[in-house]
Structure formats: structure tokens, C-alpha cells
Image 1: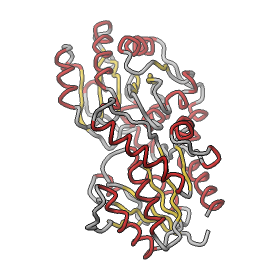
Image 2 (image 1 turned 30 degrees about the vertical axis):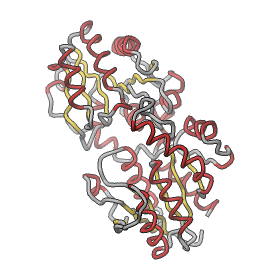
Image 3 (image 1 turned 180 degrees about the vertical axis):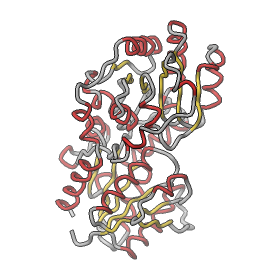
Image 4 (image 1 turned 90 degrees about the horizontal axis):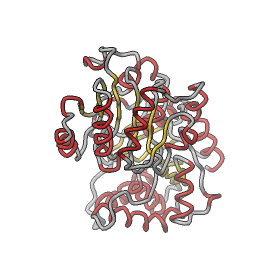
Length: 375
């Protein structure tokens, strides 16, 4: 590796799984002696203050390019590569991956593109604007991902998807899990939650964490919870997150008569303290790449229920050995699994056995091996 300078391409510092993984990886590689910079389209967001002290932050300049949306950043990113000459630029998020590849091809710097992929299958309903946008991204990736210097699927399921849907050769893929678990998780998990549901031992809290967006399918979760609450009135549902579906979810809770039993406080900086003090964690998604929150819940020794969606839950839960799996969108099945878990939790005999592969140290070892081997 000619240079120990590594760059990360990031959209912003808003709360999100991709953003957290970027901060974890950048901090870890910096601590191992690499010169690390985060190149951001937008330097706004609450996670900005969590960037490691030794990691540089660069905001990409504006460009008058005719290219639409994030693709207008190809030129400025190529200019950045020419000026700073990092050995590698890592990105995650399909649109930013395409920008990374194009900028590396345009630049004279010999910077290598490493694109981390968490799934390309369109998640929107067929015929919707979201579906066609994601389908267009998939088609662009079919051609451009072959020009990436390295493609890193974040789960085995995503690896299979890339081979089957965009026909990437399997030997060009380097599957590495996300660096989900950091050294401070145990300390953060011991903080108290200032809400009476978590201090009343007679209440069973069902917890979920994620963006309030269609892919998380919280409509199904609330409908399932209403059935659970009818059988177990001492249960409560807490969803930590924010997004476009908030109003619709609150209407659903009201229509089902569980408004007073569902709490949606918004995005929180420390979900671990909630996980430790909840009766169980539920993932209701219809699609994922590798759901970090499921790993975090297991690490906090919180029993879990998850939909067997593509991709990640079955992989994380070892086919259901570490937590119950149900079909996506199955209200009755999800309610049944929640009630079963409430009465008879399922979990690993040894937590470290199922979560060690997601620790920052383990993942950093794999990325260092990848970088030194290829570049």
C-alpha cells in the first residue's frame, strides 16, 4: 500500500446506521495509524460531534455540473482525490457508491474505490416513484460495480443478491460484516431511562429501533402489538426513531385503541440503555442489508423477534436459534412470536459466540487485511 491515507465518502452526519458504521470504521483505522478523512456532501447533523478527534472532515465543494442529485459531486470528489491522493476511498449507500466509482475513474490519483453494499433490490412497491428510482440505481450498479476496485457486501445474503441480480462474479466480492459493536457499549447500556415504563417491574416493554419509513414496516408491528396488548394488557410498545411515517403510525395506534400504550419518542443517541431494560426487541422490517439493531439487542442480552426478511436477520439469528423468526408482513405470526417470547424467551447460550464477528476489532482486522492485500 503506497499511502496510508484513507478516505470515507459520506452523505451527512445525520443519525443512521450507515453514518454510525462510517464513524466506527474511521475511528478504528485512525487508531491503527492510518491518516483518515471523511469527505461529506453535507457536514450537518448530530453525529458530527462523535467523529474521532484524529479523523479529518472535508466538505465537498458545490459544482455546476449538469448531472442530477448526488452525481453532481463526481467532479468535486475527483478533484479531491487529485489533491489529497488517498490510497482508498470507502463508501456505503448505493448512490454514493456510484459516485465513488465514477470519481475514481475520472481522477488521475490512482485512488481505489471500495464500495460497501447493503442491498440493491428495490424496496418500494412496484410502480411507485421510489421503486423506479431504486430500479434505476440497480441498473447503473449492474454496469458500474464491475469497475469498482473492490465490492464489500455487508452480509452473506447481500453477496448472494449481487451475484443473482446484477451478475457480479462471486470471486470479486469480499464479504465483511459491519463494525456494529464498540468498546463503550457496556458503559452506555448501564445508563438509566427516564420513563416510568422502564422502572415499573409489572410492565413488559416491547422495543424497536429504526427510521419511521416503509421498509421498517412499523404498521405491521403496531397491528401485532394491539393483538398482544389485548392478551397481555401490561405490555407497552416503544419505537425509537423518526421519519416520514410518524403521522400514519400514530393514526394506526389511535384507530386500534393503543395510543396510550405506544410511545414514539424520536431518535435517541443511546438505544442500548433501552435495550437492556426492555422485555424484548422486535425487528419488523420487510428488507434490510444487515440490521445493526438486532446485533445490538443480542449484545445487550435482550430477547429478540425478527422478520425473516432479506437480508441479515436469519444470518444473525442462526436460522432462528438465537431468536424467533416470522414472515414479513404477517401480523398474526408476529403477535404470536411476541407472546411466545414473552413467556419463553429464546437466545444464545453464549452471547459472545454470536456477536464477536460484529465487533469493531474483528471487522478492522478484516479491512486491514483487505486493504494491504489489494492496495
